[in-house]
Length: 174
Image (cartoon, rainbow, N blue to C red; front, side, top):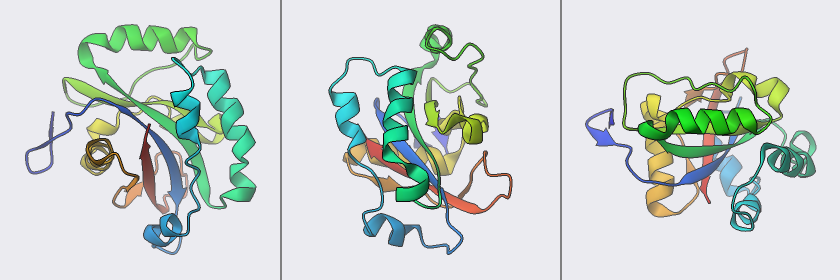
């Protein structure tokens, strides 16, 4: 799918995505300070299919509010070929998300869908979002998957932040 100056989001994979509203405008300082949980990679490596319940339990154990002040949510993004979209949505609805839907734009062949996000009550607006619909988010997701390294997105407005603070995504390939 075309993104910004002809760049393509084309690599398969999935990423974890803590989301943070940063009032100081310095996301690099946050990442450099080692404030992001990377132990989540083990959750996904140890399981063939992490359920919504398992992901929720994992995030509750992290204790975002105390350990990672300013973090609005912790999510999981999955690459979904458009041809598999209906089956993906059906599987998510069967996995304790009966109202799961995908918000995307255009007709790209691949989507990068936020499959999980916790805590859900404060982040419901972000669930089901297709990151490939936004050039900044898509570029960061592709960079994380291509390099295998944690990646910060450029400045974004987080859809779940009612105060529209500047924010960013920290993407960790798993």
